[in-house]
Image (spheres, rainbow, N blue to C red):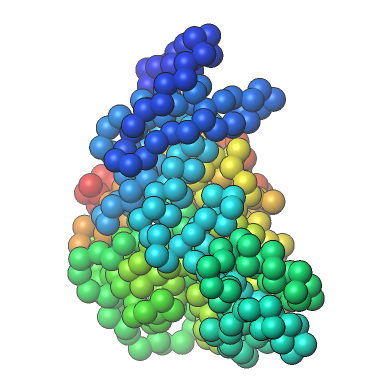
Length: 446
């Protein structure tokens, strides 16, 4: 056990016996109210978690876990990842709380601590009678779109004035029970940051045809490893904006420069930017539109290194994409195995990917999903930074694109499974693309 882990254990034991109720101010404007967090079969209350959190967040590097600065793509520091399930759950809560605080005008709490678009609900394939009932109940249509590539119609409804999205959903289900309605949930990157990065977008190159791979992410910045890649970008929350997260993911798939090599270089990359440089974007409605655009271009696989809650309309869109024979690969997230299952990784037919370290051990912070298919390298490795240079990356965000790239090359999940090798911990059917990791020292990663 590391010295850091021993300190965390000591703090937890001390709190258990002392019954400490201290609440620390760990970030400007962020308090730690008591929370009940299950760990195994023992309920652990907020005051026990609090001293641990205070130690975890005692240095600037760790505070990035919540604030996600513009150039941060490293994921959780290893000492935080090993801090335990209760700590990871509390960090998740604080991160979502901070997102809601930073974007009050755009987002609201759905009642369960999850960020959703303020005052807006989503409906899939509504019938006219139900829509009329919704309008009679005070709802207003703000968007009505038919996504032919998915055979899906989506309608966005503004809730009645002065009503929260949570209360609006309750009223809508009472007024029009046949509607397949849900919040417009906001999805996050499964590691790293999504704020706009300095530099320009990767220049679009003419597609040479052949294998196509899609990603739903932030925009991809220019970088020497992407200079010769065929990349087409489309924005679904404004114009595409370069991000560290999207650039790292893209480089792991099609990057090629000196010693750095992506796992499916030579492929054409289709980038659906669902953020437009805004952390409050990345909503279910933008993801559905992105899936429609990608489906029209018929990639062999779509990588989604984003996580969020189950959403009825996204589920319909994913099902439609899978019905067109397009594989979908998604990261399981980095909030630990005690966190709720994340989506889209947990949808049936989606290939759920976790991350392993250089020794083939599952990362302790890796999340869980309703099913787990494969693992791929997700730490002790390098990926491109916007503009130039490389960064050390960590998290399931960066394992998923390696698995997606390898799936595109292998041609089918069955062939990919035949390549899988054993690992340690929860690795699904095994580790794929195990040799795809580029060691940070090889490319001078920061």
